[in-house]
Length: 263
Image 1 (tube, one colour):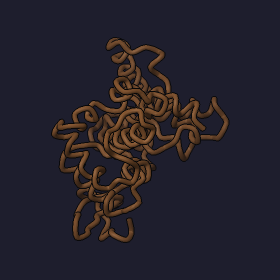
Image 2 (cartoon, helix red, strand yellow):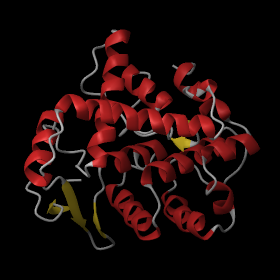
Image 3 (tube, one colour):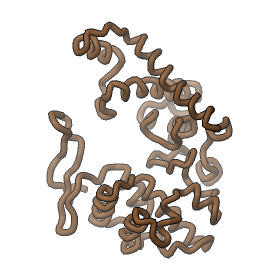
């Protein structure tokens, strides 16, 4: 990314400037960030950083998520390679790689099938053993075989394989399952209240003590850190209860076969 990065990019009034702004003869876009590089880059056999930046820009313009779109294309590539179903795209095929997001957005040709996601593609054509999704949401770039806490977070997330509901990749204690489980629960509850306050995921130093001060001096509300912990737990439980009402079962809190059986 450094080879095409022009400057850092920040949200209005934010001193962190955690984003990248890249520019080449073919592309001008904010990004690509880690998830795009992982899922739409190496995951698809694409090593050309300019092609990944183009992909990033195309998906941004079309309102497509680069994690899911990269996953879908990689799944189509593997289906084609294994001769299960020919989607007309192979690993490292830059031309088709850059064409497919537009086909997905327009629901044209193979894009109509791919727009339904990896779960739908696997149900129709096969390949469930390497369909990397949970509850229908394609998996981000943190491998649960190496990050067990992330695996638990994906499995128990109310919306599927999401790395934001709980992010334990840097904090989990290897092989300590009880500690991992507690860390996942704590982060799910904490993030629920954090997002309710519209706080950014990248402000890692924010905790419920600081949130309590925000509420006191910003709104005149006296809500303790312990109360905020309880509020977060209630929000998370409510989202899980909603899923149960919608028909989800215990069996849905699971990882795909590829994360459990393939080395």
